Amino acid sequence: MYASEYTSALRRDGAMMAGAAGGALDRDVPACPGWTVGDLVWHTGEVHFFWRQIASGALAGPEKYTEPDRPADEELLDWFNYGVANTAATLERLSPEQPVWTWAPSRQDAGFVQRRMAQETAVHCWDILSATGGSRPLDRELAVDGIDEFLDHFLPAQAPEDLSGGVHLHATDGPGEWLIRADAGVWVIDRAHAKGAVAVRGTASDLLLLLWRRLRPAAVEILGDEDVCTSFLGLAALD
Image 1 (cartoon, rainbow, N blue to C red):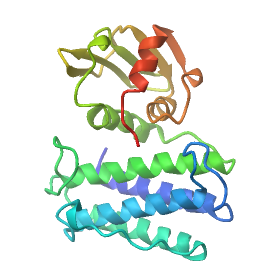
Image 2 (image 1 turned 60 degrees about the vertical axis):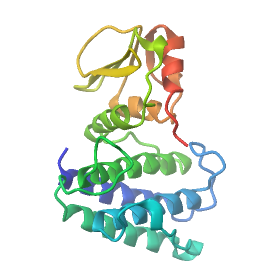
Image 3 (image 1 turned 30 degrees about the vertical axis):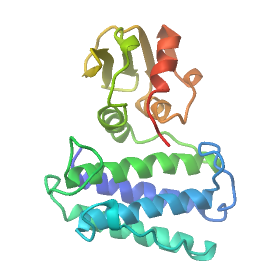
Image 4 (image 1 turned 30 degrees about the horizontal axis):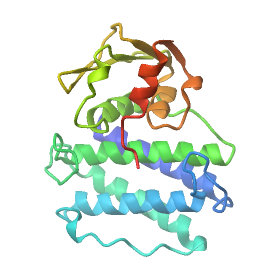
């Protein structure tokens, strides 16, 4: 995806998120146990605030970061909307190749931030829409990209020995297949049709939400060794 597509997605999903949160800040978010809609709006806005400072050059890294004060509920959505607009404007001015700090050793550039902000906002938008009765699938192209991002950056550094047979993810609503397996402790990811110990089939949106543990395995079709699927889904540290 292009940088402009990421910032467009950030604006779109940020606006949808704020619209759904209006009048529902006290509602619980089932996808984020212990959090209300207001908590999730604050969290997402604070994530935007941090990465905006990184992308703009105001911060060279997290060491001197100071978290902003949380606005009162009556000011929270205005603060969030301003942050979405400001973050998108900051990111769209940058070349994806511009060097910036990130926590991902393999990507130290603005492109990582552009992608991460779009993906973070999309998933949390789904969280809030689900909590407020307006659930809808993630944008398909963004979901496919999100699966790639998850596999590139959110799996543990050491691949487990018991995954040599592999997990095959298969998007059923368009192009998108991934075989994830382990070889001597190293992840091997083939983006092609291939047979694994287990195949997991669903829309791109459902597959990404499954990886982020928003959906249970029962929401998709699983063919093969279900224990391998369960083990794989529990590997990533998402807290």
